[in-house]
Image (cartoon, rainbow, N blue to C red; front, top):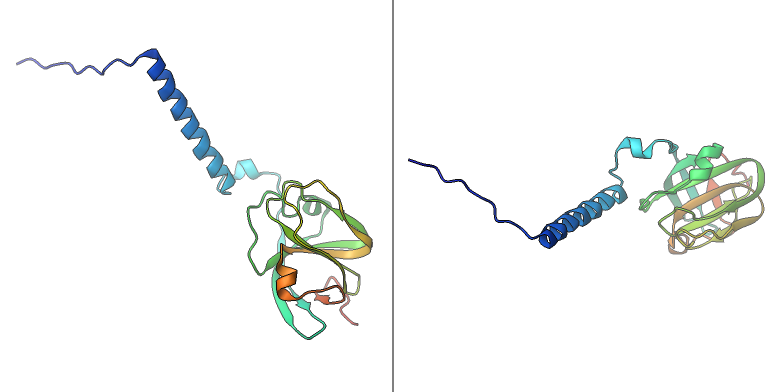
Length: 179
């Protein structure tokens, strides 16, 4: 009994090139999707700062209170990174940048994929300026316009939904919340 040899059908060179290009395109597509998902290996994310978490309260003039889970940007490295390279932010979350001493602060949206509301905070915790729905990836400067001790970043549009306005307060140990 003899065994037959199975031969694979021969592809034309053009068909082989198309198959190779299709394979490369699929690999690149899935690879980029994997990186964008935030599941990239830790080695690819080395050098990114980590942040401690704390709670803070937003208190409106009419007595409403909203508690948020915030990450603290305290060091120059943390402040330079901020919310860059993140695809999203939880609804009741934010990032609090603390500045000592108080200073005029200028922010931007470089490498930041989501629109944010920026709340500029005086030393006593009073919100002195709000910039709503910043433009993702923009290099435009966003200034406090006056010395502040903090900036709170939350999801774009949240301050309107929550009814937060200049004159309202941020209650957190970084600010002397006494009126």
